[in-house]
Length: 596
Image (cartoon, rainbow, N blue to C red):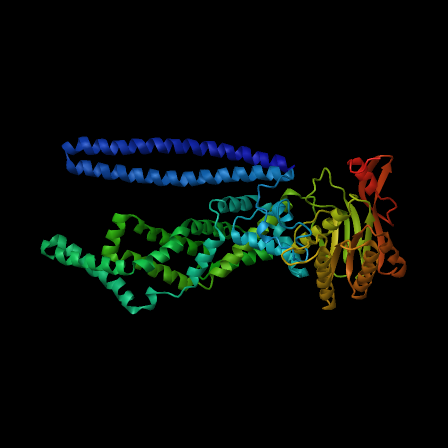
């Protein structure tokens, strides 16, 4: 059981956390002791021997520095372990269908999308929130893209399935990747500024005067300093050069500050990317897509991980300017700001063409990790088979977001193109939920992910729904007009010979009964004429009579309801035929809306 698995991981991680806390406490104590010893040595030993006191102080301060460095490293490891504990606790909640702790993807909601709004692909309680374990902005965008614009490519879907299967078993890799990504959350603004900086032409490297000054002035200044120490008379020459370099830096201060404000403030993001690239590069994969992603991170004799690490080192060095004393000394002696920006420009010139590919790899791996996590958590969900000779054939199909203890599954098939299944049923019998079940599982299938079924064969085909049409005061559109616009969009796609699987929850809702019946029949006949395929849920029993007119194109199925006096019960099982029972009046009586 997966819950037991995660609890065991939490137990092991807590042991590691306790151990590292003890080490951190010890380091805190030894740091304090070392610092006090350094002061004591300086105060008391200095009376006897200045050389001995200074030497001892240097050793103790060096030891103190090592302890600080070790403390920082161990503390990062502690935070990583805490992230891992949170991850595993969150997965336990997710197994129990409590997943509101994950990003909902509200920013991806589009009421005009062909299907995502109707199927609750994005937003609170959505499929995206259920699946999402991305730790980068680009990864979140990639997962959203797969769910809203899946690859209509049978071969690639099969390859992605293989990569998800492999990555599912690499739980340490996936969780380390996720925990690392949680160290720092980059915003869209952060990424836009980094991309803007990467695409700007070099400034200092394009001007010969700065190249000459950055090479000659530091050499002459340092030489003057050494000469001035030996021959005090020449120290004035050093001071003159020192002030000259400070003047040059001051004159370029506005530009230098603009570069530092962009890249310096994103140092933690660069360190995060560096570690994420390392997570990918250090694994030994077998599936074609994962191997391809690894190969894209190679760059000659180096790799994305090493290259980004070098960039982070340059930015970290550039940050020394923030220390007032260090900034003055470094800029006065070696034009520090200009030297750092020259190094940054050389880095961008060398790797500029590789960077988009690196970040695309990061995004794809991040999105794959989310789907692999879903496969790991729900191993009973199967990988569907993309075929060309059928539309859909499903066994035990259920909605993945409904708790498995409450979920009711159904078998369903449409074997031939240009077939429609008309589903009737009482209110609350399960018609709309079944349409969403079909749609959500097809979206998962097109992404290469497992589906909530014991078997699913499907045709790689586009999806279009009309289930949740809204009116618009801003656009001066009535509900009925919005419905017609949606249907017009569908007809236009079919006129262009697009292969589409259609899900309609009532063809027309926003008009009177007689008009609705005529309009619904006309639209259905138009869809059949245009070789459409799909499922229509309706309360309109007149529409079911179309089966006699188009026996080769239409089949009737229903969700029946059991009414025993004032008691209503639903089994949510799809059966052949037309519903015989309606329950609106009884439901209104039960809710006290109508009183006998």
